[in-house]
Image (cartoon, rainbow, N blue to C red):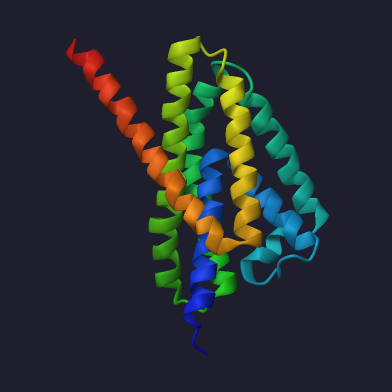
Length: 199
């Protein structure tokens, strides 16, 4: 059965939204997705079934508490970025691939190609933007403002995930704006680093 274009766009928007949110916090999007499934807001079809049940939600909640708590400690947050950056890309690919596998009838090669480029790209870009923002915060405040930045990142992860679940097409607009901002922050940080090296 052919997938109508609107359903495909909604599925891609949902996947991109969850992937972008994982660029802010790796475990928050799957935890909120699990909550949505458990409350009946989403159908746990295909691979999404692994997020069904309060046991899965509880494990993800513990991971979220540990992740957010660690990011509230100055300097530790910078160390976490070394691990979080590749983890965010993997999470972005997994989330988008899982959603596409559950919501569409795409060929698996197409499904995971879209997931790798779209999901991995969105998560990686957002994560790189947070790293650049935190580097500026660390450089200007000695890391004292980093917990505020971390709270803002967690809020954005929640906002984007909720929007992705409830209003995927609106979330797509927010994700595009967010990626544009992240690319600007990355470019600004890169230019600043090159200026410091040249002087």
